Image (cartoon, rainbow, N blue to C red):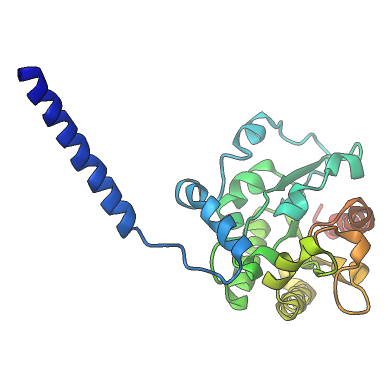
Length: 264
């Protein structure tokens, strides 16, 4: 009889706990819908990252710790960005070069700012190539005004300048809607906003005091409709091998220009 009462008490306590948890979950604010089912699903899948490691510092922490300091005369370069950088096999396109990939798929400029010290400054590169902004336009971490994206761009540059790191700003790539896989990604990214960000980046780099180099991928990969050439990206956003083949020599030329402008 005593055992039965204990079990009843335990069951009642468990019921209260489950009810309390269910009530808290019911009261938790829902993620605001974006109007794009794919983006809503993506944002929901990233809740743990957004709340526990917003900048995803854990992604490269061990790799950074294992990386040796640059040797004398080494022209170390960090490729810093989102999935377009993350998916780029840098060692294949720049064999033998001391180039380091620090791209993380899906990231926006606020997330990249969080990890800029760990994944760029602390690696002691001479040059950083920054390719970012497309996910800000899409709203991966929430709605972003153009001026807020531009402020983050400026912060990268100012932080790098303090540490004698030359900045190469890559233009935001165009997108296309020529394939079924491209439709949703294209709809999330306003071509007008892409053009506006690229104008700002070009003007920012043209100001000598900012000490930046503008890398105009956009002009090399855009078609006569103002979209990304169909054969350069299967999903309308991420370059395939043909796309990276165009981008690689342009990046190398920009690196050489930035190094030539660096103080001895």
